[in-house]
Length: 163
Ligand SMILES: [Zn+2]
Picture (cartoon, rainbow, N blue to C red):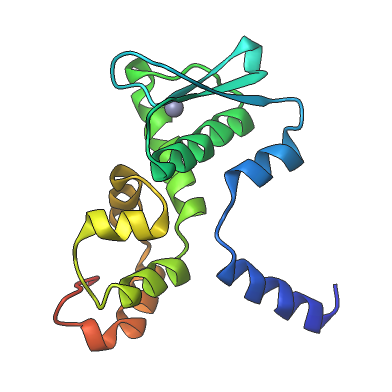
């Protein structure tokens, strides 16, 4: 990759949000998505020996996007078992998916677009994720990322605390 191509790539990766549907098609072409009714609080799962990702019907766009990203991380890690008995694995998978879905530049852009509002539900909708994914990401910000956000949101410093 030439330096200008690398710059263009990095610029586009900042602007383009992660698209789990595209990612699945590129890297897991044999896996199909089915939107199905589910009971309990399950939003998605891998079935069919890893060949099917089921997403819960009747969910929001943000929930489906975040759930698909979560299940893709499960595919990468080779564990299709998903549930409360896998608490540690679930936490790691959720953190990885939230990091992939919500880059700092996207967080900053969305916060600015909302005028610095701390309404996390509105921010989640703007970022097309579910509230839980946004909360996981904000709690998981690294020191360097907090610094970048603090600098970028200096004008909203009274509203946003990312110390
Ligand atoms: Zn899971």
